[in-house]
Length: 403
Image 1 (cartoon, rainbow, N blue to C red):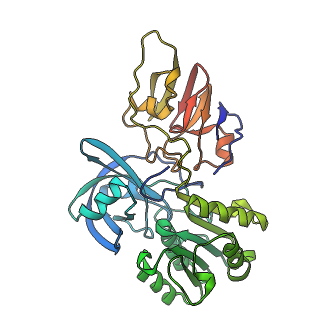
Image 2: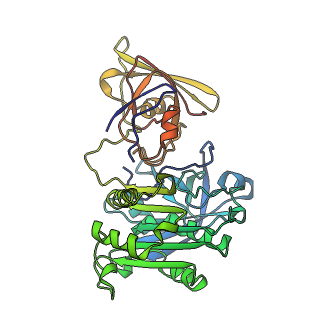
């Protein structure tokens, strides 16, 4: 899908690839300039054969930079064989000053996740980006690191559907809202291949023991037979319909959280829309689009500018400073890729249109955006774009990362 995005004008795009891990999607996250700081790994805990939980220590001087809301993510950055590698991972713990915890599941062919699962250890230092992302509850929190300030004036009901590593942000959200109020209920449908693949198995069981009347857990295993046929096999449209209509408190739900591969998330969104569920109540996050033919963003792609050639002129504002770069019209270069050639600190993480880290506002000119899994309709209407997926369509384009 492509769309032309004029400066400060509505966009037609309302569509909902990142490697290795879940990265967040649409939501009303606090606006904050993302920056990297070196953090030390204090613990690496094995969750499953192919997944680990990594804890980073946050120095007191950086506590404010690493405040976060349950459901947000961080990007990790390191150098492998002389090449910078960035991967985004959701934070798996409720907000705690002084530490950041993420879960890293080994992905088939995933360079970073394989290295982390095999070699990462306590004492290692990685660059960790300040938390970002919008896969968070719309129920107000008055302070980033104060889950006790969650608005719990009513009897809130939350439902989450997750698969595999999609549990990572969901468990942080569940822990926080259940602890915040005795009137909160949380239902979770969690899909995996087998019991041995279930991340945070013991932690989920502990939540069930702690909140037996308020936390309902439904494990669905695609390669293991369970007592209930409904909880055995892949979640297809028919099984999802039964779950929504017979098992989940659909009509009472205040907020839905969907996290997993594109097919599952989209199937859930479609099923909820068919039942008249307000889209404003549905939060979703993707860790892969499942569409290998879709265009990817570019970050770090070599592009040579020919003097006197036919070029787009791209101007961008970042941290109050203005930069300018020429981009050959034939190169079909993303705005992010062009900006990185003159400002290596331009923010980005997944470069696949999913996380939203590279968001900027079009001030002048027009662009074409290939993919969007991170911006909500109101942001598009205000002229915001994902620079990793956007290319100029007018001779001069100006974008503002500070907006």
